Length: 273
Image (cartoon, rainbow, N blue to C red; front, side):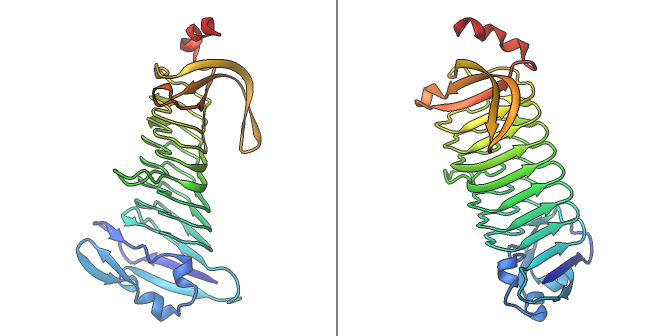
């Protein structure tokens, strides 16, 4: 079953629309879907006030697929707590995309805002463009980070990617800001580009792989070895990589892999091997 949502106009204020969810749409008629409540700024609206809704049902037993045909960078919490089905956004998506997601697939052809995959437990989110800060991270003040699933960002991401991550996989095709893997408990973060620094601060376990440049390594990490390759989700990533252990200030045993070729500034650590 395919349900297409087309924005009726360009949204100027934030829209809270956690009802855009295949799990919620599955047992509803088109009219019932149209009446679902959203908030546009401080105004209570229905989904049909904001979107033109069309429905195709070639096989009602098939999984629900929601296609958003247009830019919805102001629309927040798309796919919140979804457990099945698929959402495709042909454009940009707003904050909290896939928040507390439990299953299914979300694909965005453009960019996504901050807190994408916040506290997600399972499923897959794929962003073809860039994403904001706090990817997979919890709300400020919470320690309930990403507990499973996969987030793939083909472009760049901001600060604190994978904050308090417990398990799962985050792949960043471009660069990241500061504090990637901060407070990390477990799981894997792969960064194919550069990091702005402070990677793995206060991490206890888990793996961070940086194939680009990093300005420095936190002093609470110690070099362990040089390794020719590192595995990420069963795939070999060619190195060589410096392997650091930390964060020792937290009695952590996390693994931070950093490209040797891209970081001649880290060659001073080799005398400690």
